[in-house]
Amino acid sequence: MRKFNWVICDCCEGHGKVDNPAFSNGFTSSEWADMDCDEKRSYLDGFYDVPCTNCSGTGKTKVPNIAALSFSEKRELVEQRRQSRFEAEYAREVEIERRMGC
Image (cartoon, rainbow, N blue to C red):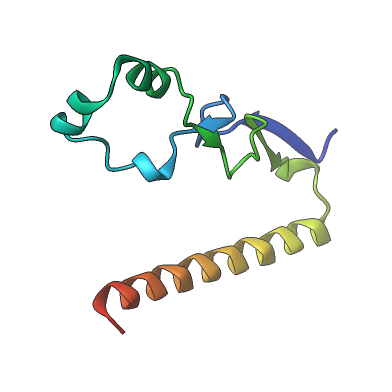
């Protein structure tokens, strides 16, 4: 039994690329009207897309097969997940403080 399985990336849905964060707020109707047809077509065709950061552009992510892991591997996985949650929580706090001007 394999210890890891590959699954479709939930961020990019297997495409390996996502919308450029620079355009995350979209365009206003006046900005869209100011664009020429080639720019609009390039945007709609994904010319400005960037590689997905979750899967590094592969479209798939590796997930552990819990049933196949040994006890020590499960313990290590739990510790990694705790550390990831801690780092994500800290990053959220820093972002909130930055927005508050701290």
